[in-house]
Amino acid sequence: MRAILRIILAFTFSLHGYRLLFGFFALTGRLTRQQRRGMAIDSLPHIAGLVIIVGGVLLFLGLFTRVTALILSIGPAVTYLTVAAPRGPWSITNGGQETILYLFAFLYFAAAGAGAWSLDYYLLQRRRAYQRKPAAVAIQTT
Figure (tube, one colour):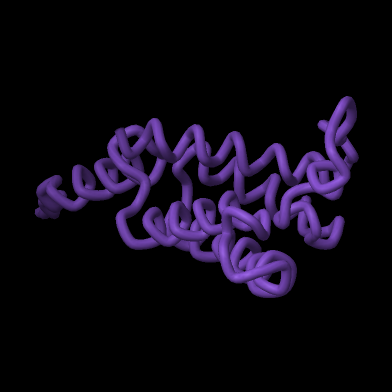
C-alpha cells in the first residue's frame, strides 16, 4: 500500500508542476471566484514547477525517495505558511487542506522510505546481493 500511495501522490503532485511551469490544467469553467484563485500550492513561483515535476518523477519511480520527499515537503510548508495561514486559522476555510496533506505525506515518505515497489528497494537488494558474494580467491602461479 505504501508504494501505491507513493505513486498516486507523485502523480497528483506533479500535475501542480505542469500547471505552474507550462500552464496545463488551467482552472476554467463554472468556478466561484474563490475556487478560481487556485489552491494554495499553485501560488509557488513558476520555476518551482520544474522542481515539482522532477521530484514527482523521482518519487513515482521510488528513486532517492527519502531525500526527494524531504525536498518536496518544503514547498507545501512554505505555501501553507505564506498563502493559506494568512487567510484564516482553519485549513478547511483557508484553502490549505491539500497543502497540509501533501506536507505530511512527503514527511511520511521521508521517514518511511519508498516501499517494496521502488528503484530504491531494487538497488538496495542488488547491493546486498553483491556484498554477500564471496571474495574471489587469488590464484597463485608457480
